[in-house]
Length: 274
Ligand code: LIP
Image 1 (cartoon, protein in one colour):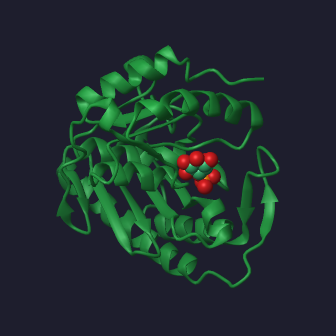
Image 2 (cartoon, rainbow, N blue to C red):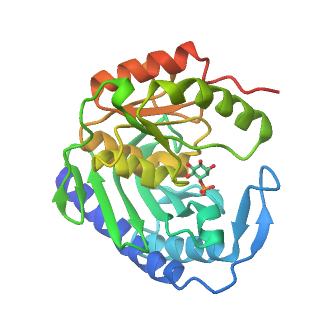
């Protein structure tokens, strides 16, 4: 089977699992409560995050038992096939907790090390259970929204750019992000904080944002969304133009990407404030 066919089959498996999880998550109980917290008291996990991840892992391993899985809630489960699924069952958990309809199921499959910079993302999908929009991409195969090809963000000047961003869960990180945001705000069209990196990267790929940047994204927050943005034609990098990573993700059309990355570097965007 050719690489493209392999990728198409992997994508079909991802979409199938995301659709099942989306159905489960959409059945949001009236009262959603915090089951536990992680890196800080505001970094929350709900019972639905865990239930959705369990369902996704079952679906993926039923089709591909030899693969590994890196999940936001369950961590890394190594495989023997050389492929690893990178899973965020609910990206935008705080939105989910508050009933804000901006959260997503994000599933990607990678070869290589299951970490940004060490992996090659082969296929990915991001599903918004509320709008039922499904963004998909395969490496070299382009990006689509509900099957329609995406052409990516427009090239605009920084001072005309609608910029998406987000903030971490730890105070020192947020202080640093607030410093950068305060400097950038008067220099752009406006800022949007939707609360889900996966949806932000897909919004960029769909031309609903001109640029996006965020420090602190975990592998599962960015795996599928970065592939969708890249395959739609955006330039996506980390600091210094290297691979996108937890340090920083910057995404936009090539020229805007260069000016935003330069400005974020000047603003020392990768420095937290103790
Ligand atoms: C969220 C990201 C978002 C970021 C939040 C959080 P989660 O992921 O998608 O961009 O600003 O702090 O990391 O925790 O909902 O999976």
